[in-house]
Amino acid sequence: GKTTLLSILAGLRRPTTGEIEIAAPPARRAVLPDTPRFDKWLTAREVVSLAAALNGQDRAGAVDDVLARAGLAEAADRAVGGFSRGMLQRLGIAAAIVGDPELVLLDEPAAALDPAGRREVLDLVDRLRGSATVVFSSHILADVQAVSDRVGILDRGVLRYEGRIDELLAGVAETAYLVRLREAGEEAARALEAQPWVTTVEADGADTLRVGVTSLAEAERHLIAVLAATETAVVSLEPEPVTLERAFLEMTS
Image 1 (cartoon, rainbow, N blue to C red):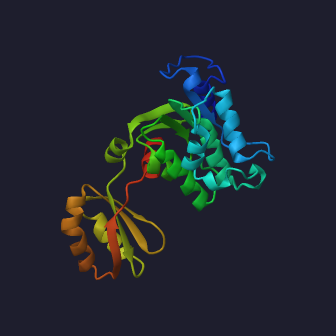
Image 2 (image 1 turned 90 degrees about the horizontal axis):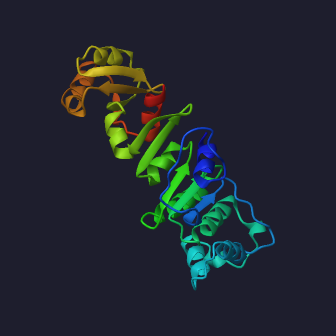
Image 3 (image 1 turned 30 degrees about the vertical axis):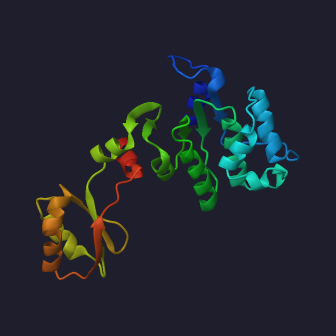
């Protein structure tokens, strides 16, 4: 339902029920589909110039400005038929923002890109901060966490959460430690399960225990002593990074 929702926000589809209210007028909204396509014989400059003309954008230097912001200044006069997927995504964003929109809707902007291409696109999205409101959908939650201030979680058509990411991570995800062992950790697991400050002990791979705790402070005071008493060889231990993916799974499972 992510693409359907963005299409409704963009005015490309009508909702069967309910209403939407967007402060930005239709002329100040921009949309980028997940796989933007351009005529292969056009240059990047011509693609963005066409988008600017369709938006009534006559600001001097607008085309060159957005091409530079998208990291495509040196490729401005190349035919887009030879562009990589990452370059095409960045070109699509350049064409979307040349009209100086208030609202930018991006559908899976980094999907199907290699790590370098994803990083380029996410950096470009992050640079839009402060100049426009950006709404984008993605099932790659690490990308969402990297660039977003607020998040909405859709679960089978139901909005489970909408708000700041930091508040979601603080309030949902369980506090845990990751303990990497030199050997099988059955004895260590039994000893930890007996502790009143331990909530769960799960095997995370062949040599790692994920230890849910009531608080990191309790773990800091007692975890090392419990492991030392079992004489288990410990390679490392650290608080588990709190990720949006884990919060999502806890909220929707």
